[in-house]
Amino acid sequence: MRVYISIPSWKSEKLLKVLRQKAEVVVADKRPTQSEFRNIIHEYDGVIIGRLHSINKEIIENSKLKFVGLVAKGVDNIDIDECKKKNIAVFYTPNANQTSVAEHVMTLILSLSKNLVKLDKSVREEQFDEYRYSTIDIKDKILGVIGAGSIAREVIKRANSFDMNILCYTPHPEKHNDLKVKFVHLADLLKNSDFISINIPLTENTDNFIDTKELSVMKECSFLINTSRGKVVNEKALVEALKNQKIAGAGIDVFEEEPTHNKELFLLDNVILSPHVAGVSQEALNRMEEHVISDIISFLDNKKSKYRLV
Image 1: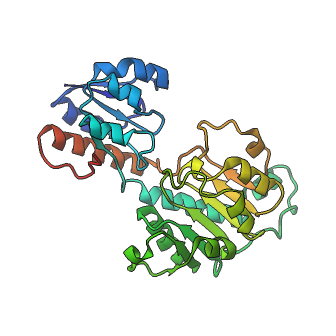
Image 2 (image 1 turned 90 degrees about the vertical axis):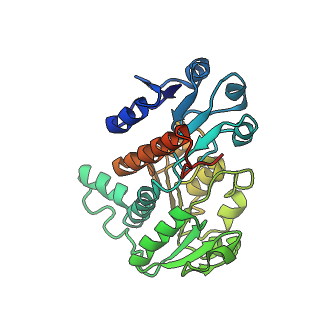
């Protein structure tokens, strides 16, 4: 049994030691390109990857993989159907980074409301009073949360502590009766929210979920936060909305292509950008590594795995 870990920044030697008792483990000394990854993966029985590598049909057909471990919550970079056909087990880490992402959402909300980036820049440029009266409070503001999964719930919990009013859109609100929020149609959420946090996975149904039509419904004073997946929001439409002040601003952690080279986004001063790091705090990474290794060990020992998707 040979296992390849494509994540050179792997943190826990203790977990690797446990896995090495079951298999020969190779950890990449530098992150391989997708092409390099494709050319070597056929040598291994199992692989552990992050979000920057994909397991597609071509790779699966030319491999002897018995399992894939994904150190992430979203699984859009793995061909799940093909894994099912080939009886390849898939493990992921759905609950390991919900705290990290929720805190990042609130950081973006607060940074936008307090105009933090511009304030910092103005002081450094000795324009001390330029943005003195440019901040707003989030108390009593309306936060629209798109989604009702584990991360959305953590966002709602934190927003409640700031005395925000919560609207929530989910296709099946009847499944979430324990949430003390007001469930509304998407159009109502877009129309009435001061801040909107997107917390849904990327699927065929959510590709370009927020497009020109949805952005046009939002209030001109509102802010959009996306920490889910880049393709959930039409990036071109978002740029136009920001450029033309159709919305007040945005906090974006995910992009249609990563790394992003969207210079139009870079030139805008009403958007805060971060490089898809919402879910990778040091604590979240520790939890993700622990969850995926524990599941793989259980799999190799013919025991039930907690976070097995396939």
